[in-house]
Length: 404
Image 1 (cartoon, helix red, strand yellow):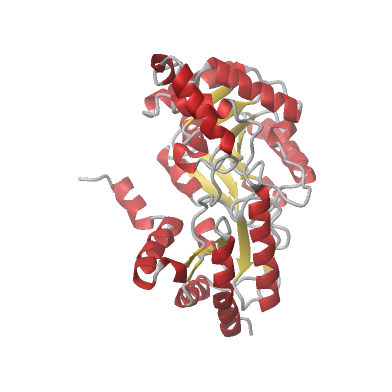
Image 2 (cartoon, one colour):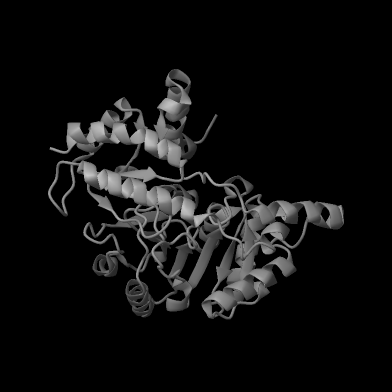
């Protein structure tokens, strides 16, 4: 009954979701308090208090036919104008309402963008490690995902390798900063050089190369780090944003695309994005949530909560003997599987053995190969501080077994 393409997708599955499902089964078997699930990036802090009042007021005061009805496929014009003005204020840009397309989260937005720009066989470049679902999003539109090997020292994008990967078939490059899974924030120097490389490459290949900047963690940065905005460094950029992390609304599926005003063939591109939003079956982003987030753009999630978890895990795991990349943003810790020298990693088999050994300690960690970078594990610390404290003896036991 199902297509070969879907069958292949099922067989590949999602390592993150599989771990999450396994964690639920383990919680039933051992008790939830005895299982330490670090698999899923599901925020553990509630949405800002203001959002509740905004939603209540909208339901009470807005004509329900407007609040819950259809609108332009790109979203309510007043919401789009508010978001454009907020971006202009914060990042000194020049968007107007027509450059914003409201989407069903960043994932929906990425699929809308890829459908709009890809023909079968077109190539999309990603920097390892990267969010594993990019593979599926590109495959949805019969594109080819091209991986750039990681810089294991800094985990900044490997720009020297990028030059070699760009071909006449290259249609887009996806970046994600702050990065899932490493927590690394791409530096201004990196983003400036990336823009220069893509500008030079466009001239060489004879067509536009779209930079898709996936930014759900934009506001989650630590230690005074500045929030980056890659669209300022390259004109052919589409920003893919989600309120899932900044407002703790992952289940509401609300986000937007922001199309750079100077992008090549911008008017036609915006027509295409709006059309794709409709024909994909999204039709439009959720109407109530569009109105709600527009009034909460200055609200932020409880960053101190994640910062506490970040510091606790980083300090503890380093003390036990593990090697970790210090997270500058997002809410993930990227930890090296013990057993290989600096700038080298263990095999996929050794990585799996480490993940299995962690399960024996009831620690659920996602293997790095799920992100295109074997030899690491991702630890999602968007969990309660109490769970972290309970899990530390298990991490210590794991270290004694593996850090030799």
